[in-house]
Image (cartoon, rainbow, N blue to C red; front, top):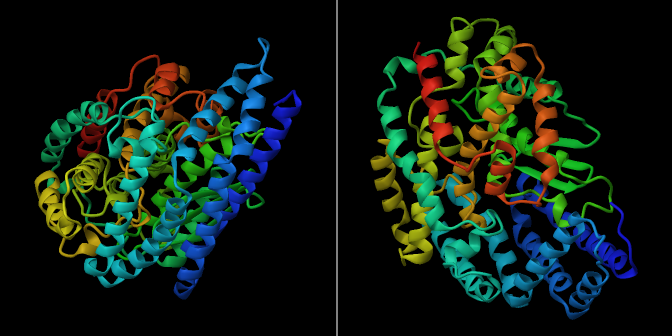
Length: 508
């Protein structure tokens, strides 16, 4: 991307240095969640707090403000729209950063690191009581952050909506309620249709850890994993992380009693990484510009869910990969490829979100969305969270946790103060469904995804996404991307229709 003008070049260089600092923070976060010893948490918190303060200073200082003003003044009538959009996004972020107290930025970074460490210990010991004070502190700090950021918002937003903006630009509670209402109404009805026989008895429960790791590696190799640019490690909670323009990390975990979990998590996280690798970062100098970032976390999740659910959980995929699993086991606990496909799609409400089937996943998100609003805007005491979690889990999914470890302690997000993030997971399912419809229209009609997978041509799916979705970066928000690529407004209808079809096939 050509950047004319002295001020624009200086701005690019400033942003490059800022992104370098941010990438150091990302590397430290990846280390903290993969190999850092538990005793290093306090020092790591200080490191991350120092970096957060430096980053805030670089993104809010008077010299940076003057530099952005000078860069905006250099624009002329022939300036490319991409450059104008970059400066517009930088101006918006500057307004938000200048509203924040540097002391709050540092305190948040320390609280996030501390919350992460306390959560890992509390989850391991099934002890919500030790985590509750850390969660209460994060809620207090995030509410203060929302209060400070309110002055920079272009429209009036509630505290939760303000905190959700970094994940879903322009999101509102009203719009989420509109999109989630069909899920609340339709998903329980679909779950009631699930016959007890829909979940096969043979789940491959004796898949050795080494075999799971090998199959995960084979999956990544078949989907374009480049060890020169990518790294996979283990963590308590699977995630994807971009450290630099040529440095992409993912993590997975092996779950006892869930022999297919690591495989599906690998597919999910690799979908995130493929999106990151496909964003418009043509060279090191373009990496810092906002348009090289993800459109929204809903779009991000649509990419991971596409590869996990539309590809790795598809019947064609099961038929291609069934023999690999059987060879590793030396037997066939699924009694054929159809049984293996059903094992990849266990239609049974469960307690754990990341292990949830496609029918019940959306209800997990509805639960968390409701509880976030209660914690942040309805003064629900933190100590009551386990009670309300268990009650709503029973009402929405018909199951109740036997412990907090499989209940309100299961996710890492609140331990890092990431309030406003969870709806992106449900939005990802909705966006993925509409993108899949558009993809199939372009590649030959209904069933085109299955056809590509059956022929081992997943690269064609990547190529379509690389043409239509990944290059958009932050030119548009999530709903605008759907309208542009699919030609229709975001809706829950395509997702529910997809589930209806798939349920019929699995029960067939």
